[in-house]
Image (cartoon, rainbow over all chains, first blue to last red; front, side, top):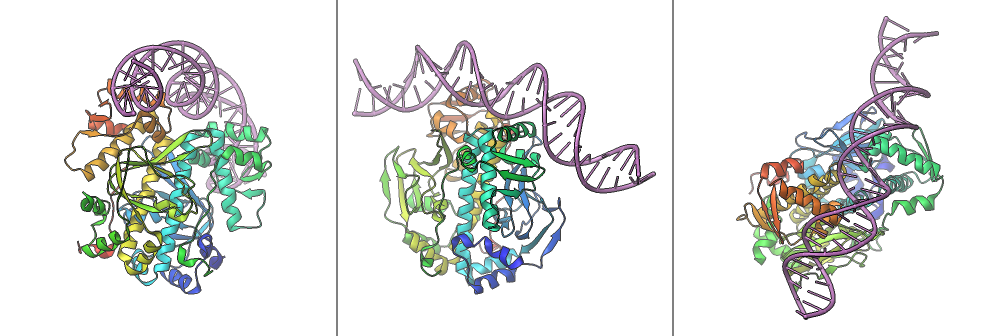
Length: 243
Length: 243
DNA sequence: CGACTTCTTGAGGAGACTCAAGGGTGGTGG
DNA sequence: CCACCACCCTTGAGTCTCCTCAAGAAGTCG
C-alpha cells in the first residue's frame, strides 16, 4: 500500500522515475499511525509542515469566528497534506483523521533543498499546486453560484472520481467516512438542510446513502446536477513523449 | 512603473536579487497595451500561458452553465496571471481588463527551464502558489460560511490591504474599477442584493461608495464584519537573514 | 441626442436557517 | 447484562435572507 499510494498523486502528470521517488521518500519521516478523530495538526500551530498521507482519509478545515467550520478538502491515500501552510508562519487549517490513518511528515528544510537537487520534483509540486488551485476555484464556483442540491451532488461526483483514481475497482458504490455534519461543513449548508437535500436525492432515485455507504443510482442525473466543468490535466512540455 | 510593479509581487517573501529579476524579465514578451474591457485570454482557450500584469486591473472569472459568472480574483499591477492554467490543457478562467492595462506573456517552455537554472525563482513561484491557495481557502470560508454583509466587507478589506501594498500612499480612500455586477459575481450574490447590502453599509456609516470611489469611514467595524483570519507570510528557511 | 451601461427601488416568493424534539446506534461503566 | 451517554440522523414549524421579476433614474459614450 505504502509504495503505491505515495505515487498515486503524481500519476496524473505522468509519474516519477525511480530516482525521484527515492528522493522524495528520503525526506519523509517514518510513518505514524493515528486513530480516527485524531488531529494531525491544528489551525494556528506554528511552523507548519507538509505531510504525505499513506493510508486512510483526512479532512482539512478552517474554523470561523461564529462557531462554524468549513471543510476545505478531503484527502485520500497518496495525497500531500498541508502544502498551503508552507507559505505561512502558522497553519491555516486543521487536519483531522476521518478514519485510522498512516502519515509521514516531510522535512521542510530538506524539501527546499530538493528544489536545487531535483528540479523535476519541484516542477511536479508546482504543477500539483496549480491543479489544487483550479480545484479550489471550481469549489468556489459551486458554492457561490449553485444551490444546495448541486453542491451536494458536486461533492459526491468529485469524491467518486477521486476514489476511482485510487481504487480502480470501485464502480457505483463507495464507502465515504463523512457524517452529514462533515458534508454540511463542506458545502456551506446547515446539517438540517443537508439532511433534507440528501433525502430529496434519495426520493428522486439519484442515489442511496445508508450509514457511510453511498451507491449512485443515476450517474447522468448526478453529473447534471453537479454542474462541474470539464478539466484536462497537462504535463510539463519536456515530459511529452518521455513517459 | 514597469520595473517596480514587476517586483512587488515578490516582496512579501523578501524580494529577488538583481540576477533573478533579470532571469524572469528575460522570459517575458514585450509589454502589450489593452483597452478596458479587453479579454486577455478566454476560458477554454487551449495551451494557456502565464502573464505578468505590469499596469492596470484585471479580473479572472469562471462562467457557470446557468448563465452566472464567478469572479475568482482581482489582480493589480505586479500580479502574475493565469498560473493555475499551467496545469491544464485548456484555460480554466477568463481574464478581463477592468481598466486599460499593460501585460506581458511569459513563455511556458522557458519557465520550465527556469526550474533548473534558477531554483530560487522556482521556490518563489511555488510559495506564491501556496499563498494563493490559502487566499482561495479564505474566500471559500467567507462565501460558504458568512452572510452578504460580511462577504462584501471582506472584499473591501482585502482589496484595501492589497492596494496599500502596491500604493503605500493610499489611506482610507481608493479607486476600485468594479461595477456592482462585478462585486456580485465576486461574492456570489445577485446584483440587486449587493446593491442593498452596500446601502446598508452606507446607512451604518461604515463607508461611502460613489461611482468607483470607495472611502472607508469605520475601519474597525468593517474588519469586524469581514471576519477575516490573520495570516502571516513566511519566507523559505535558507533566506532567513540573507535579505 | 439616443443607446447603453450602471445604479436604485418595489413587491412577492423560494431556499436556507433556527429552534426544538425524538429515535436509532454504538460504546462504556457499573 | 443492562443503563446510560454520546453521536448521528430525522422531522416539524416558523422566520429571515436572498432571489426573481419588474421598472425607473442617472450617468456615459458615440
